[in-house]
Amino acid sequence: GAALARASAFNRIPDYLATANEQICLLVQLESRAALAALEEIAAVDGVHGVFIGPSDLAADMGFLGRPGEAAVQAAVEDAIARILAAGKPAGILTADTSLAQHYLDLGASFVAVGTDATIFSQATGTLAAKFKGASAAAAPTRPGSGY
Image (cartoon, rainbow, N blue to C red; front, side):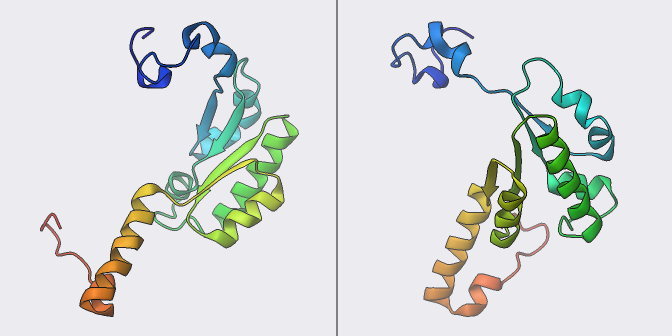
């Protein structure tokens, strides 16, 4: 809505409502083989400013559930980045793998998220637990159904 909202810092940004449309960027996310097949048409939609690739969901759609690093998935990602750039749009992607992040940047991706808040937090708490409880604490799996 146009009223009190987080985007306007709860009405603390002067002229936010009058200038917001000039500052908004619309990104679309491609996460399936069908989306990749329609990539050029999607990128050509008026108002789309960039295209983000969801590698984990793409991997699942390609039959590689939980394995976004599979060669076939990576080939599809690399092809998608090239096609997004050829369409004149910036390309983006998410990965927790710093080597892959650099690879995507080298391919021309403009916005690469390296990790997520949840995974970074999980790694940090595992490191802290290991410091005080021993190395096994960081790697200890949770009990299925325990909620913890």
